[in-house]
Amino acid sequence: MPNRTNAELVAEITRLTDALTTERARPTMAELERRLLVYNAMLDTVPIGVVMADHQGRIIYGNSHVEEMLRHPVLFSDDYDSYHQWTSFHADGRQVESHEYPLARILRDGETQAELVVNYQRGDGTMMWMRIIGREIVDETGERIGATVALVDMQNQKELEQTQQLLIRELNHRVKNAFAVVQSIIAQSARKSELPEDVTNALIGRVGAYATAHARLLGIRDERIGLAGVVSDTVTPIAGERLITNGPAVALPEKAMTLMALVFYELATNATKYGALAVPGGTVTVSWDIIDDELHIDWVERGGPMVVPPTRKGFGSTIIDRALTAETGGRVNLDYAPAGFEWHFVMNWNNSND
Image (cartoon, one colour):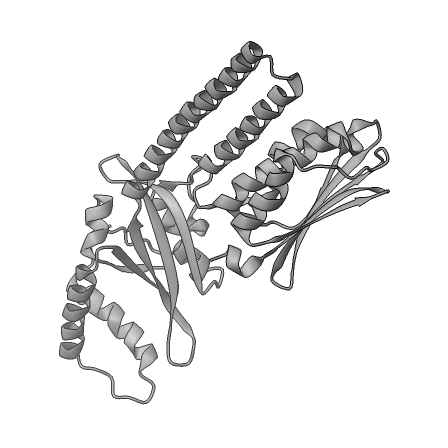
């Protein structure tokens, strides 16, 4: 369908203006033409595409950026059931249907605003990622008389994201190789110096726990990592089905996450040596919650042998206690109760979100 002429656009604006002018004098045709020139000039200055539709879904306007972005003339669809003329696809490759476009969701389904990210097929056959942001247009009485959408070019952003993911995968691969080399050096050095096997295994395990935490960090786009994922990565390989977890979705700051991974590793390995995981039937429960702006994390062992408090603190205890509290400002409480060892940690949640 060809572009609308100025006369046709004036007629549309006249119709829409009629709905907005209940008590005021209606503008003359000359005034409307001047307004049209102003509207066109204003909308052509914004660096995005702008499309407008009336209350029936008929597209009545598109600024010059629409044609520049999409590389075809504005498609003046007759109604919201004809929006499939604007050919685009979801991320999974499925074509976007007419009713899925923001204009249809607003004018047909009654939403006040709607958004959608699509992979658009331009007039020259090339593809581009685009965000469509829609808002309703209402008159002075609150009645919906149309809707408008902004078309935002996301192609550069998508390409940068893809490049970033490639770099992250490559970095992750290199980091894993580096940690593997460190573990190999530890093993070889231990054999030559005849270190006790438990010392060697502890060092290798700690490096492995840190490597796992680092790999998870590389896979996250922001600087906060889910606590449940840290528990799963570090404790599940050791405890298996004897691990019980319970807690809401909680994201940790980057620095706290790496230390927390080492803490859970130390707690799990200690449980296999002296605690609930040292005997069949023993269990470990890790639970967490946010109470009164504080994050509470509890490690509780049950079904293990008689608990005997240690006579000295080793490297693992230093990680569990001093390093974590120094980094997070939290508090650690160790309970060597006869029923089973317990570790409780509390940190200020407001500070963790800064």
